[in-house]
Length: 132
Image (spheres, rainbow, N blue to C red):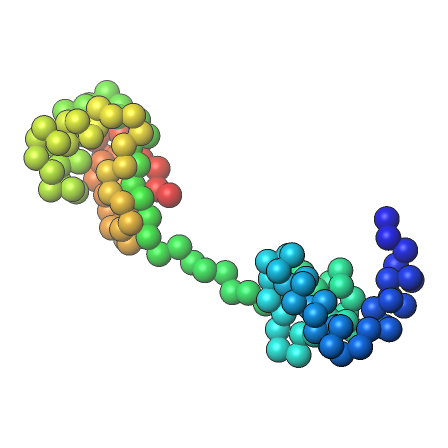
């Protein structure tokens, strides 16, 4: 483990130009971006606190597109094929081929409402659906 007192002394001795260069190097190494005034604030808070502060400042993106995946066909394969045709507008052969494939993606990059609607329709026929 690093000698933290020595690390504090070394960081305190940096010039503004050196602190700015250190900030850039740490941003590249850790894949983060310091907030405004980050160079001096990072030095005051200590280098170990910088990644947590930068990570906490980044907003979490909410997922907007979902995939509907057929996990298990269940006992009513023909009814599931009909349900897949209903939610996808595929032809009979295409829907049958889709249902018979391994872990098929029934719908790709759809809204949460559309994914839940498709899940309800297909699961009503005895299949199991996973939304990712």
